[in-house]
Length: 306
Image (tube, rainbow, N blue to C red; front, side, top):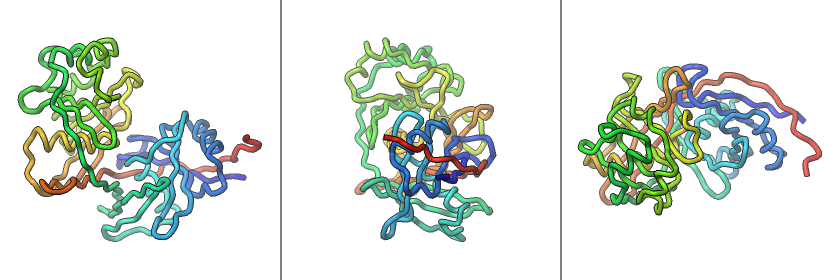
């Protein structure tokens, strides 16, 4: 049997930029094993399979990388919404509306809006963060990240351990050049005080950006990330926002940011982030952006899979 799919460039208004995500909009009847094989064949960072929703759930999502099943993130939500609107499974909205996607028992609030004829999709989440100021000293960070004495910001911002759904060491740097010179050194990391923390990845960022539209440039580093790679940052955004609130003394209220990931010459992503900070309540964070449908096709489902 053939299954139709669309390829979507996520977090960009420009074709052939952003993150490549493929979406099978009618995946009912496929087993997890079949989905995994099909995701491996497409070989994009993620492939989203959409199953019929239930009650007030518009769609059930299953997400696979070429290697394994993954949790739903902001990039997979944006891709799914764009493909569903294209296939008319979701209506085109004229004003903000909220739909619900699910992955198993977890429900995701997805905000859709039209801006100048383009569809903006944001994943909305309630965030409770845990922040630890006991971090490696500057020399340890320099060794773990392969940076020099003037690369790490220590005055206008501070390094923090931040945990939301996942934990990150968040390190402010002074330049875009430093962000891309940073190299994760596992041996130096293992010798540092960070080695005992339950953190698998480091988020480095700076105020210098390539785009005039954006406020910060972000990059993820880690032991399992290639040195020249700049993977998606959507999962780290709640922790990043919590670190800004902690170190920059942001007032209670609604704030908006534009963030960039990757260089313009290498599939740059632009993310819109809005968050509501309240001293007496969990922070509400919305992460999303634009998306462009690039291609459509169909694939034969693998047969005789045990």
